[in-house]
Picture (cartoon, rainbow, N blue to C red):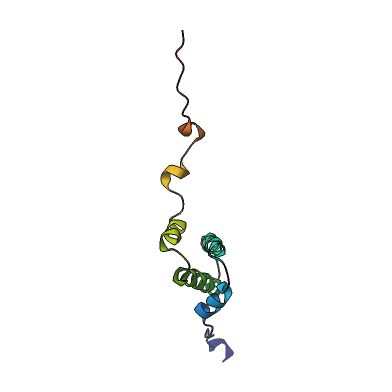
Length: 98
């Protein structure tokens, strides 16, 4: 009965992720975090999803990363920044017509 054999995942994803981010600068960690968030938006196989989650968790636990910056990257741009238009920033006053 080969069909009944269940595949058990023996990988330690968090340890692999920690090895991956070892030696990266803070700026590179934040860039990798952005890439991971972007990749998680689409569909992945369960194994790939576990890998991405482990990298995200390893970056969050890294001592060089700031929790505030990580939270801001997770939330994305604010509603005001998303819906801004060019004329919203116009500061030139209207001239009086004579």
